[in-house]
Image (cartoon, rainbow, N blue to C red; front, side):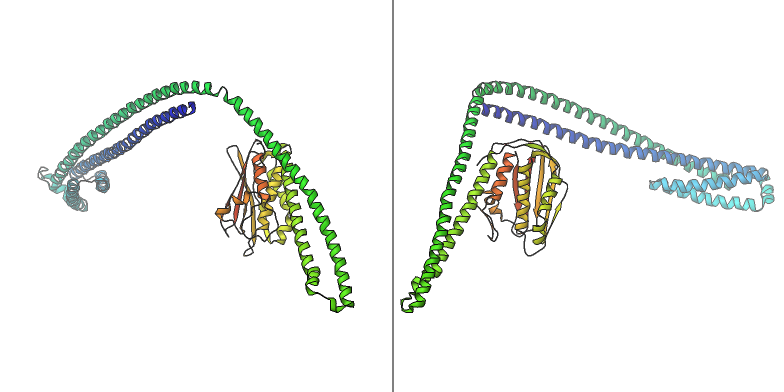
Length: 498
C-alpha cells in the first residue's frame, strides 16, 4: 500500500511539474518568436533609416556640387581663369557621380522622377558650359552686359536647387516616419520581453511551490513506506538465503543425478560389447553350420544375426554415447555454476584475437574471414568471458551459409557502465520465432546438419547472467545474425541459476 501511495504522489508531482514546464516552454517559445519578429522589424527599420540617411547625404552632396558648378561658371565668366575651369569640371564630375549613387539608393517613384528632372536640367547646363569653355573670349564679352537673374545657366542651377530641396524634405519626412516605426518596435520589444519575463518568473515560482508541496507529500509517503519496509529487508534476506540454498541443492542434485546416470550407461555400453561378441560367435557358428548343412539354413535366423542384431546394437551404442555426451554437458554446467568467479581487468581485443587465432584453421576450412575491431576493456571473469566469446564465434563458423563466402566480425562498444561485444555474421540466420528457443536447454533451431546437443547457448546465457550481463540476438532467416553480449564495465556477479 505505501508503494502505491508513493507512486501516486510521484505521478501527480511529475504531471504538475511537466505541465508547468510545458507552460514555461510555450511562453519561452512565444517570447523568443516575438523577440525574433520584433528584432527583425527593428533591423528592417534600422536599415531603412540608414538608407534614408545615405540618400540625404547624397542629396546634400548633389546640392553642394550644383552650387560649386554655378559659382565656378560665374567666376569664369567674370575672369576666364583656368582655376575656375578645373573647379567647374571637378564639380560636374562629382555631380554626375552623385547622380548615379543617388539613383541606386532611391526607392520612391516620385524621388526617381525628381532625379530624372535634375539629370535633364544638368544635361542642358552641360551644353551651356561646354559652349562657354569652347570660346572663352566670346563668353567673357557676352558676360559684360549679362543679367544673371535671367541667365539660363543660373536658372537651371536654381531649378536644380529647388528640386534638391524637395528631395531633401521628402527624405526628412521619411526619416521621421522610420524613426517613429523604430521607436514603436523597440517599445514593443521591451513590452513583450517584460511580459514574458514576468510570466516566466510566475511559472518558476509555481514550479517551486509544486516541487515543495510534492516533496512534503512524498516525505509523508516515505515515512509510511519506511515503516512498512522495516520487516521487509529481513524477509528478503531470509528469502534470498532460502533461494541460495535451494539453488545449491539443485546444482548438487544435477551433479549427483548426472554422476549416477553414468554407471548404468557404462553397464549398457559394456553389455552391448558383450552382446556384439556373442553375436559374432553365433554368426560364425551359423556360417559354419550352413556351409556343412545347407538344408538347415533359415533366412530369417541368418538375417537376424547378420543384419538386425548389428543394426540394433549400433542404435543402442549411438544413443548411449549421445546420452553420455549430454551427461558430460550437464556436469560441465553444474561445475560452471559452482566455480568461484575471479574478476580481473580484461584486454578484450587481445582475448578475442587469441580465440580467433585458435579457431583459424576451422574458419579457413569453412571459407570464412574473421575480423576483430575495437573492443573496450572490461572487468570480469576471464574463463567465463572466453567461453562465451568462443562459443559465439564457433557458432558463427558452424552456421555459415553455403551460398556466399563467410564474413564474421567481432566489434565492441560502450554505454553508461556497460561494455558490449557483438559477434556478427552473414550466415544462415535465425527465424524471429526461434530467438528465445535457441537459449533453452537441449533446444535447437533450423536445419539440424551440425553436431551438438543444444547446450552451448544455454551455457552462454547462464554464464552471462552470472557475470551480471545479458545475451541477445538479432537475426532473420538468410540474413545473418548479431549476438550481443552486454557486460557491466565493473564486475557485478549474480547468483547462478540452473
